[in-house]
Image (cartoon, rainbow over the protein chains, first blue to last red):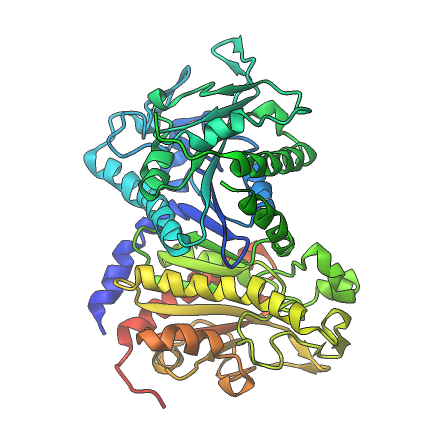
Length: 266
Length: 266
């Protein structure tokens, strides 16, 4: 061993410029829930030079879901979950999209063009898939496989912006489903009486917008009940708000699970 | 479904008081190295009330390996690794010890008695094993299993205190091995000429001190070359020092691997 290995390592060091694509935090030996946060961070690997965007644009919600990771962590801790969260901005690759989706590597997000994503070569596109999507997706497969015997559900946590294309959104919490709507409907039927927030089904997005990839690709094949939760990001700006929402969701989901009826998919 | 599940979740919520026991950061789709940092944090779960120790004692090296996690992260990034790191102080449970080791849950560390570890009930001891050691150990098993086809080595990263029982330690970097000494000897034979640091084999600890558990339990059974690296913690206090050491180690290990001869174990 093996000069070949040495040179292989040297050439592979190009890969590592992407940095960590996925993180796992395991809260218990036998987690009963898998919590997923695809858009946890706005980190853009240095070699991509901010995708040609100004720093103030990279702090906006187009680059990530502000507040979603702390809520996902709090929820995971309260539910004995294993948490899988992304390590790279969705502008580099949106891990809630399959590689053939046109918006997996968006050339435009809202009003912003993304210079670093325009006219990408096949090699550059493949590198994004290999070093962002694949590690993320294979870690989900792995975690579900390892913990399958005692996993009872998947919950994905997202946030959305209060103002979208100059319109104020009324919805505060969105409960979204993909091909399996059992848990989403159970949650809609057990909204906490004292919640005081506007909850809507399949708002502000729905599966037809392509947002059900993680649910359909990773939970549905295992028959694992699953739901995607969207929280308006002005409700989860402070640590107190984040832990309050996490506790509320944990209790709500527990009640929803207890009352969930076995239903077939729509 | 299933009031039973609801109550099961309620009772399981006791578990989650430990919080995350293990974290994984994956740097590439097909990591070639597994980096392990058992003593990454001094976090003591709140319900353990600091094990009865003052906060200033919990910031000392007896509770964790200061500087080790940033070095491990830098090393992992440079080597396309998957990094597995602990989420709980080694005073709660030392993940580099098997459950039957007397110092897995130490009642004393250096001059400090650990009140929260004295006269532990069997139930409390089992909870530490179940919620700290088992998630950590099973995650290592899982990561090695999943990535086995392309994993080439395991590197564990630790730090040690410059002053131990009032003696200044001369060693600055320790290269330690367990039952498989191939990579440790290769590193000793390829110490960078310009390093300017005192490197010693199996110092300041050795396998006979019980520190080779992770290496022997997780790497040796797979024939995976492995080494434990101990860094004197005054050398990795700043971010610049940490990234400098990480880069130096990545290059050193690459050279060592390239020149490593197949040797049997001593």
